[in-house]
Length: 272
Image 1 (cartoon, rainbow, N blue to C red):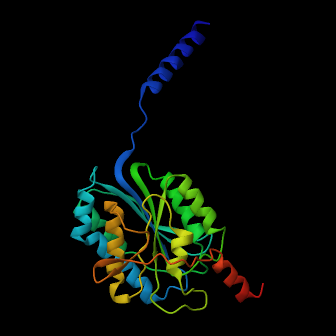
Image 2: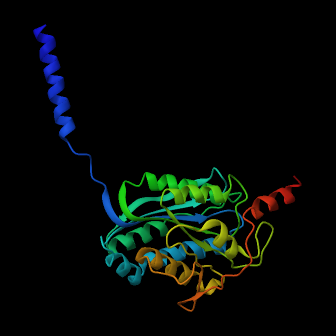
């Protein structure tokens, strides 16, 4: 009996000690940013190279370093993932805390050493769902949580992009967009991808998009977008276009995008 009481006392003592240990505090950051880039076959090698180099240049830019430093906390958390079809999302760089120029350049250097790849189908909804999960597993306490989606075509696999967006917004996550429109609409592309991103992809507090329509300005478009996301810079309207280092607000056309155009295209092409 005494032995049982002794063991019980030891267990109660251990439980008291464990209960008094505070949970590990999460790292505070101004921004938790998931960079989600399209690697579907519609992205030709030149576009992939420009896209990758745009993000590398952005994190090597002193302007971006200054934007990080000027935040209330002075640091951000970033992860870089690639996506294609509904079940194809791969994280190239895990969550990384960037607190200064050296950290930002190290992130860029790590990204520059990663190989590029291409895969089939385009599931923006899958990319958003994956990015939401990554946000929940970030291990940071962020003032703002943002998903940065770039791609050159509409959703054509997985669940509705509208449903994925709605779930992300319900978790107070903002989705920004970088529609890539460097070539004429092809087999599974659409002419007005910027309108599609405006109406079907981006959303949340301060959401915006920066369409990339010119190869010569693609890097600047990426850099501009990253700066705006880090600095939470206000945009007069939800769509802006980078031109010669400045922003030109796109007209808010009355034309509305069909948010199921990609799925419809796929059915038509496959004869379903």
